[in-house]
Image (cartoon, rainbow, N blue to C red; front, side):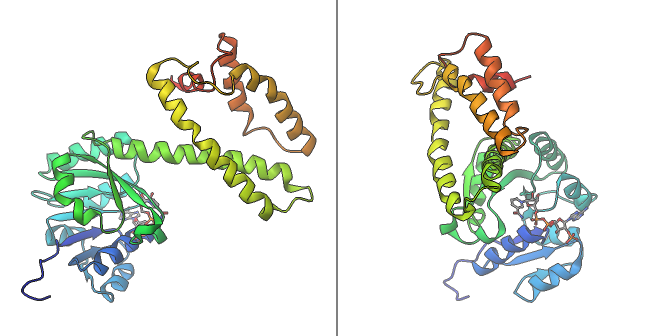
Length: 293
Ligand SMILES: NC(=O)c1ccc[n+]([C@@H]2O[C@H](COP(=O)([O-])OP(=O)(O)OC[C@H]3O[C@@H](n4cnc5c(N)ncnc54)[C@H](OP(=O)(O)O)[C@@H]3O)[C@@H](O)[C@H]2O)c1
């Protein structure tokens, strides 16, 4: 570094699993002084060979930098790794996947120990980290001021998406998006099962399925608009009554193909319940409210 080069913010990173190691490499590549700790030291040694400073305790890693990033398996591992560690004056950014309630409790826990806290939910897989064109990003929640202070450093491994002061909101957005993804995967599994025993090339079928799902995914904007206005009949293209009338065809096709309807049936039952309260001219938006306990 020359005298004119602005110094990069030092970062301490706890956790060098698949995700932590990818984060580490992104900060190293951007020239940030990086201190790393991992429960199993061999993983830290690999990063040390690439320019990180490996330390043998979580306390040592926390002491090394004002900005401390944690990316461990789950919230319990964060609690055990940081148990008894002096966090006073530190800015703790927790990228571990948790529930919203765990994130809120962890924020309060950190603040009781004199640390400022941001929670993060990573919307990327390790190969997307440090690759801006891959489109990966991280949801952040907690103090906006703290987020703005560290935004540039946090933007090195992946994009940043701040979602609010409530510490639980990053986890909430993370889990909500991933839950939507699992519903999509469930639908894709059923679709592949339908063709599985037929002379249909799954490789030729896949782009048809992907394009259809991508087109239908745009429907979430209409759902959102209806949830916001409260008028579930607004701009309805495919009324619920018509859709429910079609469900026997789907179930009979599954039966005919020797495919279990266990992924489809719960959704169809919700559609039917909504129809039964006289909502035939709505679309599927009302199902959202049936899920609320
Ligand atoms: N990988 C992904 O695609 C992905 C995507 C988005 C979000 N995430 C999230 O990122 C976080 C890390 O994921 P990962 O893929 O890096 O997982 P991973 O490869 O399984 O690594 C887990 C990390 O947690 C550490 N750990 C586990 N239990 C611990 C404990 N009790 N005390 C201290 N350290 C402990 C492990 O240390 P050892 O090396 O000693 O086992 C390792 O560093 C998770 O919350 C995950 O949900 C991952």
